[in-house]
Length: 254
Ligand SMILES: CC(=O)[C@@H](O)[C@H](O)COP(=O)(O)O
Ligand SMILES: NCC(=O)COP(=O)(O)O
Image 1 (cartoon, helix red, strand yellow):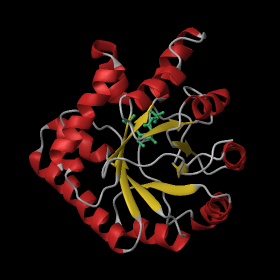
Image 2 (cartoon, rainbow, N blue to C red):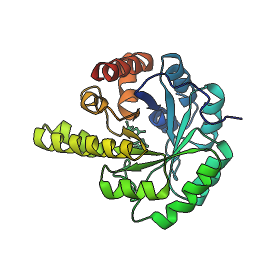
Image 3 (cartoon, helix red, strand yellow):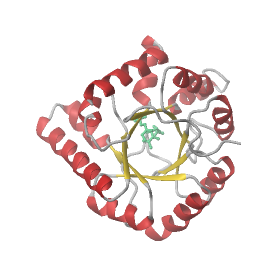
Image 4 (cartoon, rainbow, N blue to C red):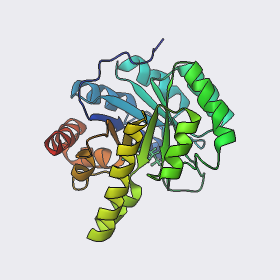
């Protein structure tokens, strides 16, 4: 049975590799290949610090059976991304991942479009956060880098927040330097405020080789979760090389 925090955390800025989109490719043909478990084994071998997997309500990529298989295949901590529903809570309690990151979810969205409204959903989230915490699962809230949301995370007693870097990634890609700097500052300011208040800040979504370094340079960030880009790169250079290169870029930025 997996337990919390089984693996020593080796890097000051950890790299959690999200393997959802290995499962996206697998599911495109309905078979077993490529297996996200094999991806998790490679991540473990090349020095990734954790595996992130988002069990969506519609099971478009990761499926229930993958979770146990991932946990059995590697010693890396599993960060289970989940919507704040009773169904997902029961699954998290049954699997006891190292961490559960509560994310907003809309069935019709292509990807996680924004952060969780931790402030507006306080009453829905409070019992879920409490039950995960009581079970020894490290709770993380996937929020926008906004003071209102950080305050809400504090009130909920979440030990971790993950800042949604999607707006930063879009700004970076557009080449709008002013907007990029604004988004980066928002994340840096909230990371500092989180750390000051005893919350461990993480970040992720839409990070790439090109845009990762300014985020990785934010000193309070303890973990980045990166998936879609790494899986895409893996098609060309292999997952091992893609993870190693992302690791190098993160280390160089610190
Ligand atoms: C919450 C989040 O950012 C991740 O789950 C990631 O984006 C991969 O999942 P989707 O692409 O299904 O949103
Ligand atoms: N929480 C963010 C994550 O797990 C990875 O997001 P992405 O790199 O797939 O966009």
